[in-house]
Image (cartoon, rainbow, N blue to C red; front, side):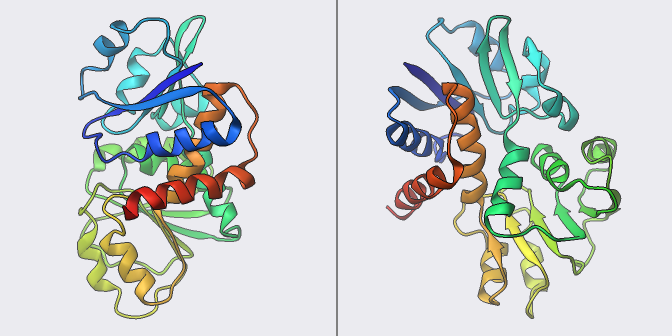
Length: 268
């Protein structure tokens, strides 16, 4: 039996339990998946308090970076982006992994967003590094609009093949092929006022709470293409289910099931 949970703070809004349980039902897997409040600095003690019945955990903020410091093993990609959204029990202890990078890639692929050259990423935290790694490609141009110069080296390491330029927070949104917002709720809302005409490219919002975000709503109102944060949650969740159950999964079949479950929960 699978016994798993999503950890973070705040955690009450998380849709992960709904999505993972929907996946278990679709796959015929016996399991339970809950949400547990774990604040920054508490992850190590929480893991030490557990019995051996736990299979693994999904991690949200503020634990994605903390997990790297306490895991017994860290996969290469999680180390590269300095962020882990998954902990899996292994013979050595706890293994830290990331499905965020693949989640971004699969969501883009599902929407047919394949050919793009110029990317803008709003933010430079853990989710931004996953986004940068997901779109990293030789000759690709990535602009990062952010407020924390101390994160620039980590962003460069996450996307070593791309040309990266950092923009100050006061910048006007540039015209790009793909824009990805990775900031916490409300942080990028003021950019919505800049969208006064049909924007260029695709807008990918990493958040699903609030629903929809102000920036995504303004983009959508001008009939421009958007990918919402539920898509990211669905696709990174599918890979977490595969890691935690050890089963191969059909993303094309499972994704609409999980999305429908998420939308039902949001709209209730």
